Every structure is written in structure tokens, then in C-alpha cells.
Figure 1: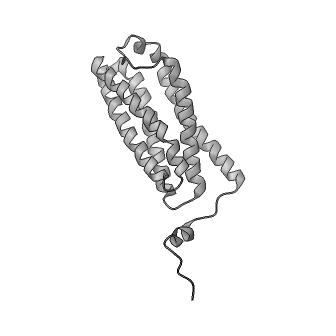
Figure 2 (figure 1 turned 90 degrees about the vertical axis):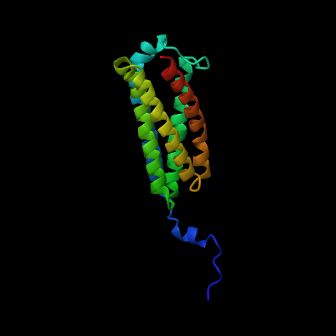
Figure 3 (figure 1 turned 90 degrees about the horizontal axis):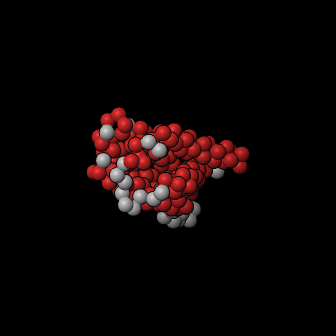
Length: 181
């Protein structure tokens, strides 16, 4: 007769051995590459427009100088990639669903920049309102991702909290632009 396994025994039975160091390094590089691909594509959408229509736009009084955005996003994209990697390497139940939530938020992140910066010259204020809808969906998707990551890797969930904070801040800038332009 085996002893009572305790309330957490089922979690141990479901866990899978971690991937080897080589696979972990490759996976980290892939997650970083995906994040920075999104960042690079976003930079392409902003390049001509930050110095174009956005310089003359009515911006929120609390809007930071443009030079702040690059370093902040670099840190956030790195943290996002590391968080996804931490979840992936656990190979835990729910990991696939958590990484699907991550992929959805990454796609929404990719969509926001060209809509906000790229579509404004073409369709005007409607682009800014559409971008606001996207960033609100993005905040929701990142929140779901945090809630999915947290039980698998507390560090991964915590790494995304500055991202949510920045997105809420960015949403206020987006709202101001939509109302005032």
C-alpha cells in the first residue's frame, strides 16, 4: 500500500522533464527574435510618421519625449521574450495555452503601431480610435497572458507587469490623440 500522495501529487505526475540546455538556448533566441521582429516591424511603421504627422499632432501633456520610447520598448520586448521562454522551459500543463495567449498579445502589439502611426495620414482620426480599440484588446490579452503565465512561472507573470503598466500609459496617450486630433 502506498502512502497518501498529498494534495499536490497530481502536479508532479503531470510535469515533464525540462529540455536540455542546448534546446533552452535555441528557444530563448527564438523568443527574443520573435519579440524583436515585432519591434522592428513596429519601428518601420513609426519611422516616417513620428517625424511626420505625429510631430504636429496634439499630444497629451504627460507624453514623454520620443527618445524615451525606444529604450522602454527594448526592455519590455526583452522581458516579454524571457517570460515566454520561462513558461516554455517548464513544459508544464497549461503551457501551450499560455503561449497561445502570448502569441495573441504579440500579434495585437504588432497591429497597433501601423494602425496608429501608419493609417492616420490616410484615414485620419478614425485610425486613432481603431488603435485605441486594439490597445485595449492588447491590455486584455496581456492580462490573460499574465494570469496564464503566473501559475506556471511566477517570474514570467511578474516580468509582464511593467508591460501592462506601460500599455495602460500608452492607452492614455492614444485616447488623448484620438480626442484631440
